[in-house]
Image (tube, rainbow, N blue to C red):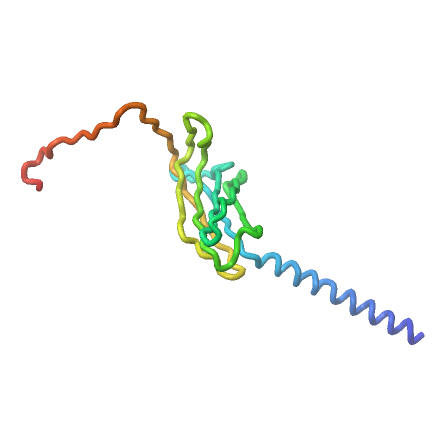
Length: 153
């Protein structure tokens, strides 16, 4: 009888500790460093789906990590690429630079020098302006005209 009582206590204590261990693992995973944000149209305020987000680690100078926004215009980067103590440049745009001519739906915007602290989640959001790519095919000229106001110097 005493053995059953001790077994019951051990099982009971084990079951009581399981939620604590699970809660600890979940909280440590949620506290990993991350860069996240939202990309919207500057004119309408609507989210931009499938915008490209380039996250460039300036400490490692490796190739930028590419992320895309979801249907709500949101992105989230938390993999091993986001390292505490590192500084990042983050670029957002929507378009295709590989086509000739390039197709630019929203002009690129950049946020420089985003420093990530230990276990920090940094919100970096963008308001993009609709854009276009201008291809100059001839010699550009600078045209200047005199100021019509003679009192202006």
